[in-house]
Image (cartoon, rainbow, N blue to C red; front, side, top):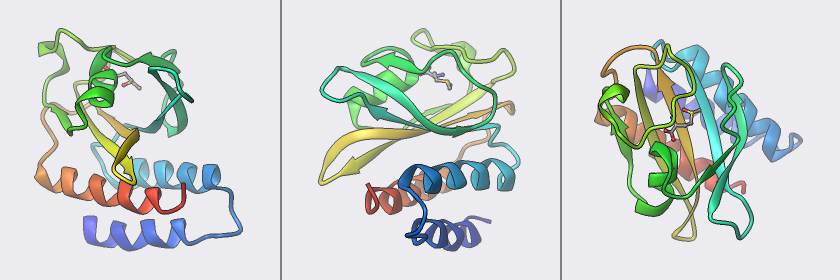
Length: 150
Ligand code: SME
């Protein structure tokens, strides 16, 4: 599944007639449609010089959490740790921001441009413990491809 998706991601990022935002939107929709346990897919980016993340393109239910301060929730922790964060069971996390009661698990992978952590891809799942290293490697690839068009 991920090999085919890698090729599809590259065809989306190559669509130079589309805005970056439109290409990111397509990526979110592709991932949510194609991976059965990806129920919400979105990008957060650093909000200018502020120590906070701002929601970018996403696919899934609208969320109230359009701004997340650095350090808060899974996303805010990744903004400062620069590390992937895989959460098999969100109910076991103290520093977690719930977006929907149906969410059971989450993965957040930072997005680097020239070595700087400038945002992240965030995936919520309604399935408990669905993420493996294959998801991490795949989402790192997605972010590397996206970094080229930012
Ligand atoms: N659960 C995230 C907040 C973002 S929503 O999942 C869209 C967190 O704890 O940072």
